[in-house]
Image (cartoon, rainbow, N blue to C red; front, side):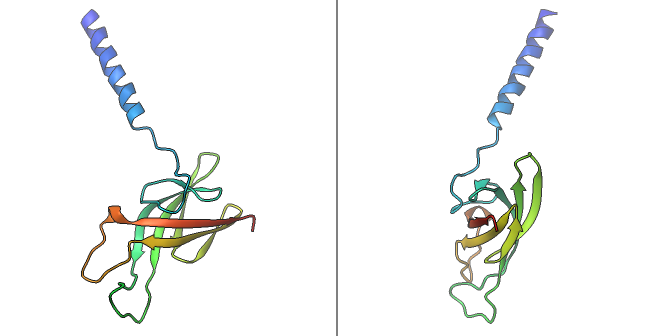
Length: 131
């Protein structure tokens, strides 16, 4: 009986410690260098880019008829704990909370003949509240 209780204690301890190890990181205080899956404060709202829907930007070393666009699947982490999905497009303001949220920049620049690894993407956001 003691062996069963000891084994159960070890398993429970392991589970509790693993739960501590997977605690979510706090949101970034700066919204100028955010990667996919990172939460960041953007002058009020906490947002998280979760997926690239489209990156059709013209490569920097090419000539294009259309500049292209970048669209992201985003999550707004509301103050009451709810998560609200929305979409952001580079340079276009979206109504969020009490203001306008904008995907302001995407890095790195595209280059023809070179793919961008998903982990290399960085995003900058702005929020103009109270509008």
